[in-house]
Length: 406
Ligand code: NAD
Ligand code: USQ
Image (tube, rainbow, N blue to C red):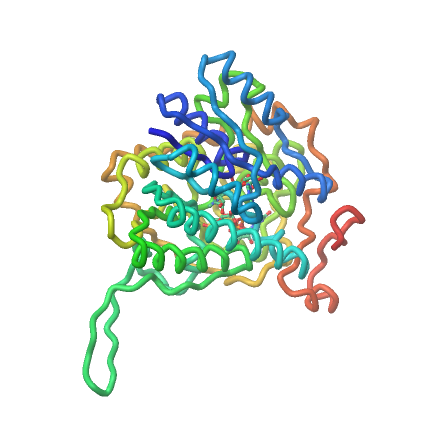
């Protein structure tokens, strides 16, 4: 298969590109390297020593004999170049990772809110528009998020895979329909993913574009079989207050003896998936495209759910780390249930990596090994969902540093 990986220099995109290249597909990466520039803007960097993209690609070629091409394109801004690439490359599949993905970064300031909306919605719309414009019948696989459903909306009811059946009662009678699960985003970033869903529904209906939307949970872990072949191929590991996701942050914090930063009571329940399972799920999705004319296929790409205080207790039990409860910088439910239907991937053969299997490896092989690279000044959260709460002294967060103030 000819596959374009948009956002292929990122945390999920890089191991996916390698996994698909190793499986014999013809892979090309498109990226504008904006994630590396945001690290520079925030004064942060990956815990792992991530090589420059050209060095990653030449290492892959010399270690495996396989070539992955690279195009430096901003897909949100450079429509003509994106269109020319799709016409020239004629991909069978396009995998779309190329969005600003951190909820805290998206809530930092008016500038980062506007950047996130402009980047993410333009990127998705440009891809859809270029498929119509070029007439290329590629299957579009998008990385969405569990956060489109929101947390707590359905109580302890199982969250379905994308769609719900509704009964609309009007004065003329009753109507039954299947609709997208109501959108209930918890940040500007998550809101862009709910907008993506509407664009997919429209272009599938109007133009017959084949779309798979993967509602992924929080990804943890670092390495896949391909990224661990050599340190030049190592995946990124974010741990700072904006881009670090909760479990990887806890693992790094435990490694340096920093208390685990649980926001609020820790009663929030979230869905998780290991990066190894992310790449396998994407492979399963590309091998099982929707039929032409079908509505977008939605998978819940998650393997386990955990309440955050239980997750902190698990990491603390393994490492002896202390646990701190910080005032929550976010606006979110303090406690929620989360039961998720992930039966579609299980039926396709996904064999999940559980926390109990993978945690110790992460603690020793990544957090422990690269502990000297940690910059402690970037650990505490500096982004607040509501500025006035911070100004009223409602919660004692670390003050933004000169590097992160916006
Ligand atoms: P990432 O920031 O590490 O990677 C995204 C990549 O896309 C970066 O390399 C960036 O430079 C590139 N990019 C962004 N905007 C672009 C543009 N306009 N043009 C070209 N390239 C652009 O993020 P990630 O963690 O790999 O996430 C990838 C996708 O998966 C995102 O869409 C995210 O919403 C989704 N997702 C991630 C997680 C997670 O826990 N990491 C969980 C659920 C869903
Ligand atoms: N949290 C803490 N302590 C921390 C960091 C986070 O308690 O040090 C809490 C947050 O308040 C939140 C939960 O942990 O309740 C998850 O936060 P997160 O930063 O790990 O994840 P989130 O902001 O939801 O975003 C991440 C990815 C995003 C993806 C999403 C999947 O950055 O790209 O879409 O996970 S999901 O959460 O399922 O929507």
